[in-house]
Length: 269
Image 1: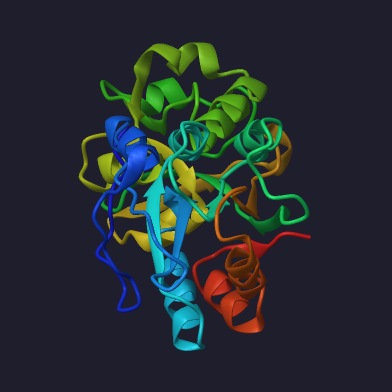
Image 2: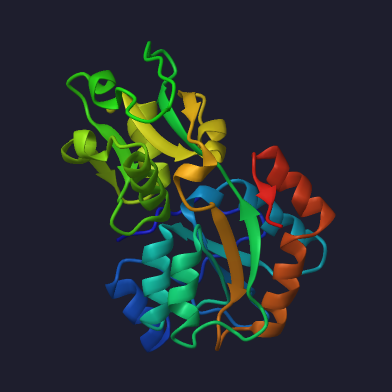
C-alpha cells in the first residue's frame, strides 16, 4: 500500500534509498529514507495526523531539533513496514492494536511508548448534501445512502474503518450496509471520496472533517459504540532512540498541544 506523501515542511528533507531495509520498504510500497543522526528523524504517522503533525515537527526543528521526515499512511501499512525492517525512528499509530502488534514483536524501544492523542468518530456528507440523520440504534443509514455507497477506511485493517464497523455493529445496522462499503486505503482517502461527491456519506475522525471544507458533519458517533480512539506514540527499536525521545517529549509540549487542539485533537489522559 503506497503512502500518500505530503509536500515537505521547510524542515523536511528528502534522501535517496540506501540499504536492504530501505529496499524492503520500497518493495512493500512505502518510500522511506535512511537518515544519519545529522540528517534527521524518520517518523511514520497515521494519515489522520497530516497537517498538525507537520506543523509540530517544523516547530521542533526550528527550536533546535534535527530535521524530521514524515511518512503518512494507514497505521496498518506503517506497522507492517516497521515489521519488514523499514528504517524508522518514531511510530505514531491511530489505534492501540497496531502499536501492540509491534510492541509484542520487540520492535518498540522500551520505556518510550505513551498515549498521545484522542479523537472522535463522525458521519460526514458532502458540504452541499441534503442528508440529515441522527445516529441511534437502528437508524436508517442504508436508506440515506440511496443508490450510493458509504466511504470507510478499510474495516479489515485500518483503525478508522475498524472503529466505524464496531460502531455500526453496536448500533445494529452493519448488516444493512456491509455490502455497500466504498473501501479506502486510509481515512484521508475516505474523506476525499465524500469531499469529491463520489460517496454520499462517509465515516472519518472529527479532525479530518475539520480539515476539509468540502464536507460537513452529519452527526457524531456515541463514544460507547466503539473502542476509545487513542493515538499511541513510541520510538522504534534500532532507530535513533535518544533523538526520538526528544521528539516524543516535544509532541506533548505546550506549543504542540496548542497545534493539536486547533486541529480538533485532545491530548490523551
